[in-house]
Image 1: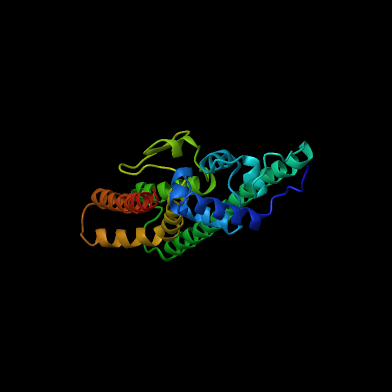
Image 2 (image 1 turned 90 degrees about the horizontal axis):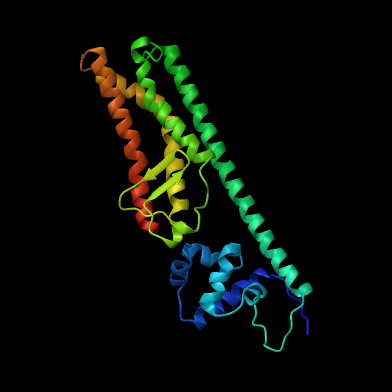
Length: 266
């Protein structure tokens, strides 16, 4: 007999809790088997969100039930027949969920985009202030190379804010891969394997680094310039030391957070 099958988030979450407890698993254990974070599992079980459509089959296999039962939030008796009319709302709801998650990812990217643009505005104001006060020779011929670190910082920050994918392909979760490759970019961090458990945290760390360094670089540059020129060294030496220290600070602030959060959430 056909029933009324629709996705009820609360019912879905309660059913997942029931299945997990029946199988004697913790949220963390389930998360590890699905290559997601335990926070994601918690959200499913509280009815705040639903799993990505690609996770439905693995989730059903773990609990030894059908995808339809997962979506309907209840066991379907062997003598109960489901019609196309019953199944279609479940599939439509699952696809809608995927669209909602994609919309949430786009909004997340837009939020970081606004933060980065504010950082760029701060950078521009600082450059204007330093230029007007002549605190440092920003545009002098001998200072041209000193723009290398801030341009590097802005370019990397913009790339990770606006272009890097919010979610890694599934094969990153299925294998231990210690590099991220996307077009010309190849990110390799020894000792850190990238997957969808640590990728959101890595992205947040990189984007925070990009915003902070972009917003603060002009002032850092001015401080480095004054500190190095106080040594009364030749101009070329001042430029070299300033560039070296600037790149060292930028790269250190880039890789150290990746290592920390990458290992923590791996």
